[in-house]
Image 1: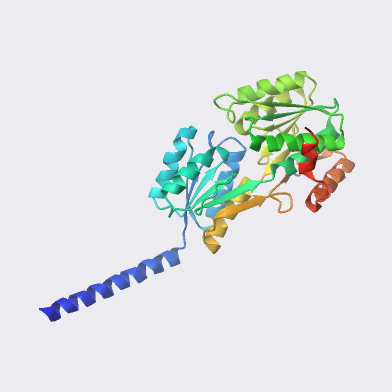
Image 2: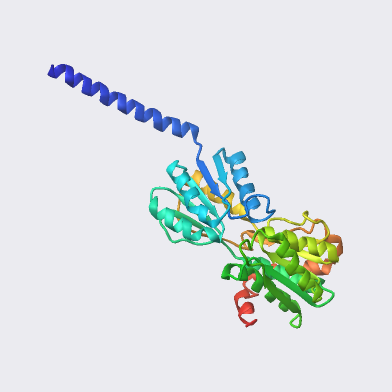
Length: 336
């Protein structure tokens, strides 16, 4: 009996070993990572932040062969549950989009220490979180400089979704860039606010019209879906608007002067690519002018309306920012 039991134990051990090896080999051969993405409120169709993140996710699916799934929370209160669902389903990387996700990523990453998370647009100091930030001030400085060179009324405007430090990085950079070109320029600043600050086109239009009535002839928005209302008002009144995050130049061709690109698609793709190729690593990655993570578009619909000397000036300013010759933090501090 002992011999029989001993043989059975040996056979079971060999079977388990073989199963283990087969499982590891299958994972290795398959090579597919499961990537879950939780959009910010407003979901897809904003032609801005969420759409850009989704584009990066789809690029990863096409080029890296990862398995993807995305969800679109209707409100901030749904963030936690969606993140937990991905963690419970053993997704290899769970990506949260937007600064509004900060508290939820912090909480859920603590609840699931063996899961890996990435937060796009804010920082969370956790050993299982990869944070991605952008230097919005640099790209917005260029947008402000261009606006100052293009305005005919010497008055421009900025509309943010909410009065928050992150959104003010756009507004302050824009104002500093404008005043770098023309210290006497007038810059209006306002916010959408309310219950849907980043998904209220009607309010975006209302705020923009108020600025236009006060002589602003170029309006830059950092308000995601609410910015679509800004574009509508600009088209109606025959002025320029400046888009944000993704390339919005084609939303209203000829009306959108340029867009301040915050390459969320590039950041999303890069985080997935690094995880696939090198394994997950926590920490912070910044996207800025020097690594082409922020910047302006190529003016597809408006280049003929911008003189060559202005384009050359923008190129020079970009070079000076990257080299450190222009200290944007100092320029912003001088606004106060």
